[in-house]
Image 1 (cartoon, rainbow, N blue to C red):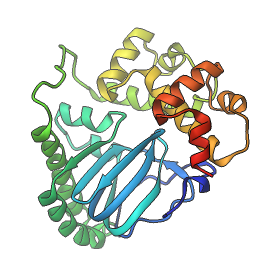
Image 2 (tube, one colour):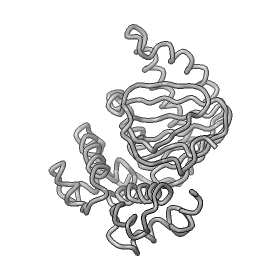
Image 3 (cartoon, rainbow, N blue to C red):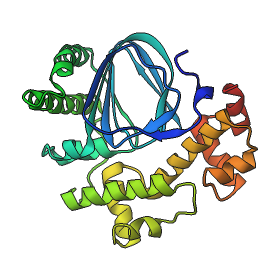
Image 4 (cartoon, rainbow, N blue to C red):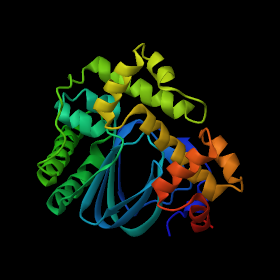
Length: 283
């Protein structure tokens, strides 16, 4: 097992920036988060993540892409050949992506597509990107190709998605100002989820009415502010269950849940089992 769940003792804020790696899955001793778009391409092997409190399995021939602000970390992976690319969110937002693409990138849950041909193409480019990233004269070439690869991943998801997907419902566009609001609100939630945090508190950080803030956030991320807050709290509760000897009541309080009943309800829904059962899995 590459990095067992019990070894995770904290959530760290990882460095942001354009980054590329290829090889065996690394051992991760902590959960981490960073304000980048993260792309994982499994050429051979398998990745097993804990992402925002929920399991995420990325099998051979598949690509996972997500906004990495939610706590995540590898908990078990098969040796193999995996390509990773991190693109700063600010860089991706300067690419003039279509609105549907921006919305897909900012949603809270990872995008996973099965696309062996795209995996092979991506792997072939990664070796070149490893040489170009960090080279001022050539890095722009890598960025142009990464942008094209990102759009191909999104197109692959569209081609495999159900034709009966949710409609836009007449929502307004994601302007640069709205995107900044979303980033700020997400950061407020990540910084304050262990405290009593109301939608009004999050909305005030961007000087919006709570109802309007909820609309803007859900439009971009695909979940409500309250659901995003719960995801952060569940992830923290899971971390404490498998890395500490705190009682369930203490964990409920430390992870921001206002009551034991809320803690049990949300953690059980996320884990598919009661908190005590989940704790036993980590020991």
